[in-house]
Length: 379
Image 1 (cartoon, rainbow, N blue to C red):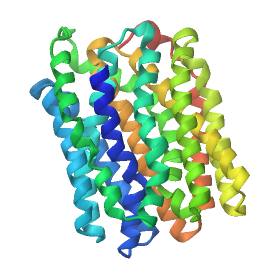
Image 2: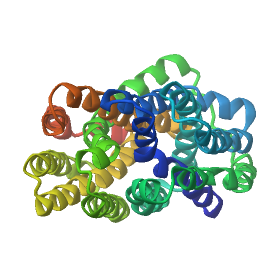
Image 3: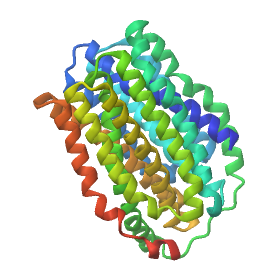
């Protein structure tokens, strides 16, 4: 776990600090809101495409080499942003970073399941989530401020921190390679398809909150230009998300994850609706309240849906569960980035945020459907 948390922490340092800054760098080079939205859209689209192939890469090349390669692909192109603020160059670098981030996310969450028992998996997911959220609490809100008050190259240098995680990745790989191999059940194709269908429910529930959260994290610096407002709002959202993701893990271990999903979906709708109203009315107190509510749902549903995904499958399909969960997370963030940017060009940010609230509302019926079959007989 120390090696996993170290590699995860350094990897997400590189991801978090550029999430709002890379779009700003594109605007610095002359791109509009639509172009800025494409930056994280390309990053996360390549992330999602990569995530489908990570389980196969792990089987073929092993945990250490694959995770180390992911960290290099995440960190090295980040430093390369210093070369140009032209949109095509930024999009190309974002594509490479997306491949690295896809590797990091799938290997990290799968490693949590490999290193933990089902009875304490919620706590393990919470600790992993804390390593993810820690960099985002500090680096994500302060990145735009540092870029605009000091310089963009300072931020790009910090974004190279994933390179320092390579030794931890190799150490983690040595431990995981000693884990016993999972047995095949003889019906791999059919059973894998059945497992993938089962995993669609937590993935769609995760989509609802990550579309909203991804939109706010990407466009927060552009929705409210005053750093004195943006920094505390984004920091509060990430801090509450970190605490919620850690806290709900122990609660889910004790009472089950299912019963807490619907309340957090409702909190998602209230939170992003509050942020939309605050941006329209320029209300700082409501912006902070909406950010806190959205942050609690953003962190809570990440933990709950990952625990649900692992509970829905047998241990030999942990990689599939990790892959599909991460697809839900990053696909939601990509949609939030691209769609909200496109709508904002034609209308405004409040209208775009209300669209994300509407999608979260559409996922609510899934939150009330208890997956008893998945829990009693994992696919």
